[in-house]
Length: 229
Image (cartoon, rainbow, N blue to C red; front, side, top):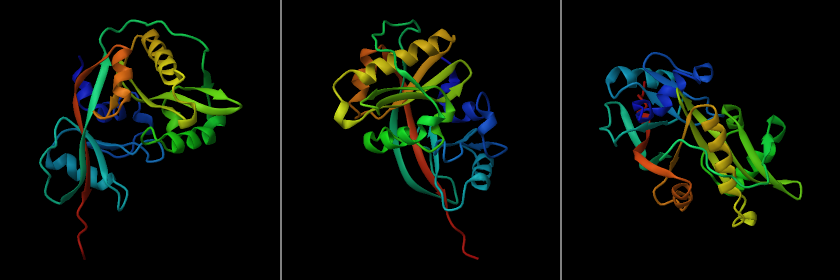
């Protein structure tokens, strides 16, 4: 398994998604209206110096790291929590059931934001839908379920924003959307992966779809300590 998954934000923003990356040197950032994540090349003073330079004022850096690393000088800890990084046991297509989902476009941006507010799938900004393919299901003209792609690494694409409106749950929407995108990614010769909190009940769905835990990834929220003039 590629070690690039050990530092997914860095390899996304210095690789396939370099065109959206902010920052320089040994640090990168997604635009905050796309995703709230930043990355450092390694845990060292030079990387953190570059991270601080490119970080928007009064904003924490949200890093994906292999452990809850020691806090560097000049930084304060805001939060730290583990996530399960999951990949399919076998990169083969799995049977999907219809109906085929709708392809979501920029015209659906407002509906996607409304659904994200109701379903709370995790960070979802006004331009998150530009990071990859998004699909969904509608009922009565309203978007009630969606799933999409977020981080893109060489050979890998992350599934994200998999969610269903509370009033439409229990109908298999999330499973069908996940299967659909998994198959599309595999068709492209890539491997799908995802991140989920250990306590999230969705982990059982992903396990049923053939995902297994690759490793635990720590999400570290860190902020430079303000220096008074």
